[in-house]
Length: 155
Image (cartoon, rainbow, N blue to C red; front, side, top):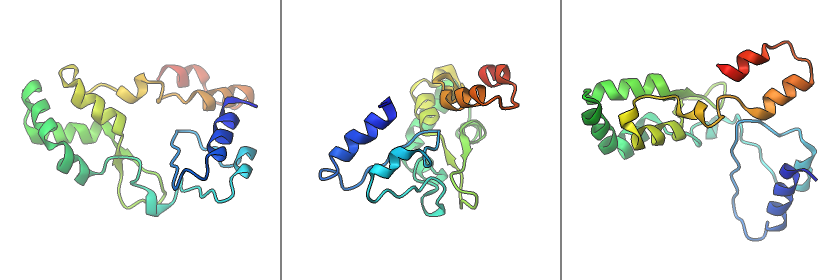
């Protein structure tokens, strides 16, 4: 049993304990047979009703992070509105449904920026390997897919 199957088997063995389990990632596994072990799995990956669930909305950014954004503006000697505009151009745009009502900010990038604002607007998600999903790259390599793999690895 591979690591992913083992992980899901462990969750299944504790189903009486959990009311709700949300599993996130960047690779969709809906067609993997390990999901057959769940009785009531609901895949909400591209469901419009949940499209803002796994990111930070514009309203949430202003409501919950405004103090930190203001601090970053002072540290970077920028206006608050310029920091918000730069955050939007750098970390917003994720959309988890074709007809999503709004885009969301990448939580990892926002929190990393606010924690390390002296470093500026870095590509925090990419530096965690989030920018190049290893499972996808491996799949493409193993299936002779016409994609420039060196470009995927280095962009």
